[in-house]
Image (spheres, helix red, strand yellow):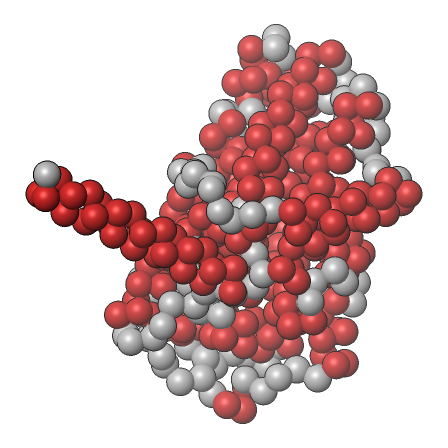
Length: 380
């Protein structure tokens, strides 16, 4: 994974036989809420960017978001920095087993994640996919097409978007898809910004097919990375792909609770601005790193706060999810279906309930109009 990422040992997710899907009772002694000092410990040494963004979230979301961040950071470090990435992956999978059984180990990050996955019914597929993406890094996987890169982004960032949607109590298929796509967009921006840094670590995330089309031999370039107009053209092409996903993601902000919209709108715009800054600097992310100034960030945050409330959930056409994230959306919906089959009511945000009620009202009016027209026809 790129060194600037903001946040299974198994290639296919196992059946969801434990945790929130079966109602297996957690061990109360290990599921007690963390105290303030424990929460601070989870963030110690963490991302300043994440910490700043988390301040825009409502308090009810900030704590579970911190737990998710801490787990992502722990898992990434364990796989990326350990001597044996595959052994680390197996260890993390075993810890997830215990977490989903409601019996986490004593580590603060495990206890915090256990509380989150049980409280918000996060399907096991999501953290398993995250671990799989981390292992792709350790395996030196090659990415030939944009779809390959987006499949990687789906695992290391789309999963985080999906889990964040769930802790915001937003579970509809469209909303989860947009959250995953925002994660992928951010990962594409990271890749475009960190081309040189990744190359010096022996990693290449730019689509190899694009490089070949631009006249660049990927392996030869990786041995001696330098900026050229051809590399800049490929970087710009990746930024355009990210912009498409940012636009899709902004369309899903209306599905979020009102108090969560400013944070997500801000994250969307500030991250997209990294790409714009990179373009202003000539697309050279090999010899330098694009940075959005503090003043520009503040301006974007201020503009985003107001714009976040302008989105409307009504009158939008559903969008099919990006193919690479479809299985993550399906996992959430299957978890919801199991909960409904067990007699639990679907978990919907206020805005989702309002949209459902409005659509139901419109269908009833349409049905009544059709009946009236039928009666008029028979009378004639």
